[in-house]
Length: 115
Image (cartoon, rainbow, N blue to C red; front, side, top):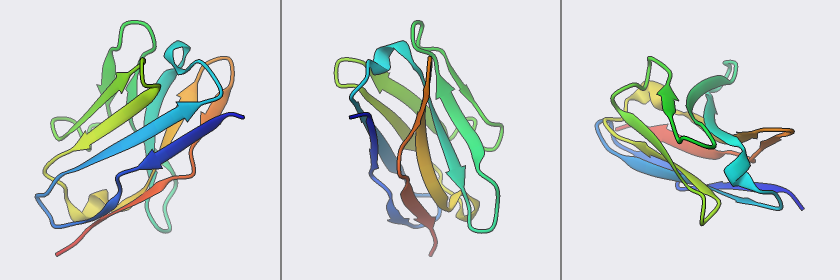
């Protein structure tokens, strides 16, 4: 059974940090590009960051560049999103996505940035 399970979300104050994890199972995640998306309440889902399968090259949306870092551990079938200097506008449900022959999505994890 194919699964992507996100974890690590929560409530954090502005300027704080969180590390999201997404554990993959049921498929060979090392052959897939892995991405993080987010969806704020009342808004469309937007792409946040992506890391390629082979070379591990990471690219970011302008809104998070310099603050967020995506990484992957193929041995653990896991992708991470380190989020620093969080802002209230980062509040959203964060989803991981695996894109290859097929596309898989996780169920999402809530991140709330508020004082």
